[in-house]
Image (cartoon, rainbow, N blue to C red):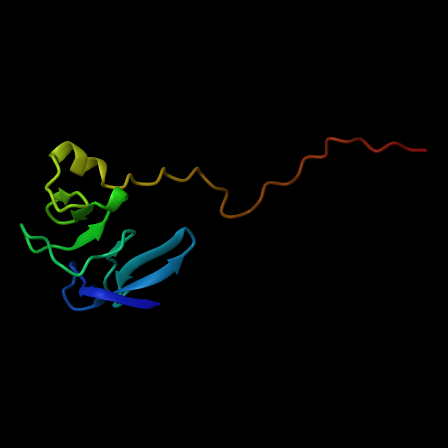
Length: 115
């Protein structure tokens, strides 16, 4: 776990820390499980200039605020709303129905030959 700058925007008590997960690194509140805030993008030190919310890195050097959804390009110019919305990560597809973590039995497709 590596500490990153910033206080948790959800609980306002814990610090954001980098963690390693099954799908790569992410940033979450150090007070987990009491606070469940997490974000996949790198948090920035400076707060949002519009709402003082948490600003995170986005694709192509852009940054975006997770509170008010405003975004800025690499030069600091404000992006139009359509481009800002495109920087918000899409949620993962829901998992397929499982059988309780058990593997299905292998079917026996080969018949045994007797000699």
